[in-house]
Image (cartoon, rainbow, N blue to C red; front, side):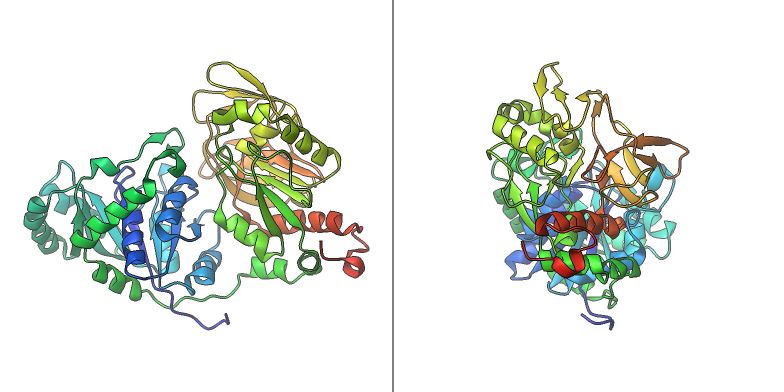
Length: 482
């Protein structure tokens, strides 16, 4: 792609509040578009891992996140353009209430922030259960709160067909906005939740069939053609690579990584499923080769791995199985002792600890790569966004390296690391976290890689050096394919 602006048909689904049924309606809309023969790219506003899994099932493709706290506006536009140009339409699911952002007192980081940053038309999914004329008052208030809101249409959720026929004209008259249709209450298509949000797709029997059923209903009750038309009104977007990414892609380290193509073993199974597709995208964009493995089911780490990543998930739900896989635990310990670079986040960090205690007080041996025992705290710990700064040099880069990320966990550890200082936005709260040296970066914080692309560059470069058997000084001359 060149620097000229390109056409990316895109639209955001948003809501007035969390719990409005936004994810399943969005999944149904996406699936309805796929059934019409369209290639759909799906994105999720905010730091969520689980909602994108449902969007991935609906779109039958990769997803991504779109978070204006994590990234510059140029990076947000790049993330849309770099994949959206290959699709017929990009559908972006909003997060929480439309204007809800940092600290509960700001629009920064909100769906509104993401929409205005990328000039994306918005359709509001409005939970109509228990409301009648007040629907017009609520919708009008949202429309008038910010004049540049980009809201172009309304879909009413959890409403009967008979009442929809009566209330929709009232809303259009009072609010001056088009109502595109409705979704009736679908109790048999509901999905459960736990402390981190919705339950995982693989925990819901027949989830693909549920999404199909919602899509079939939506095809009858929502004007899908109008939805597509609104997406087509989005302004052309600049696909140019942001300066912070261009600098990383053009250096000697990136050239060596691409020449070497180190294999990065990424944990991926029932226990480790919280992974940003965007992080994997950046790993490949920089030249890494991803190979998935299962700490539950496989006997050892892939033999050709030059680096390992343990992302988050629910290791506490599978502590017995993880602890019983002694050959895998030994393989991880050996990889660490051999100096293979390792990244571990949240659930992955728990797996690398000495022990994991479940809710019932049962204690299970883990890898023992880092000190400490993880245990159930009974509440969200250090919940939310943060910006972290390295207090010492290591796998992610030099002292002073900064990245942005998110924490959301109900487990804590007796040793959380002290090599980064994290600061909460809109707050004076600060705390130390993460174990960080030349071969490991491990802690509860989740990293969003595009917030600081040089961190993954540094990680991959160390993997490439190990893979090719060269030193930093020799790498430019002796790098070789792994």
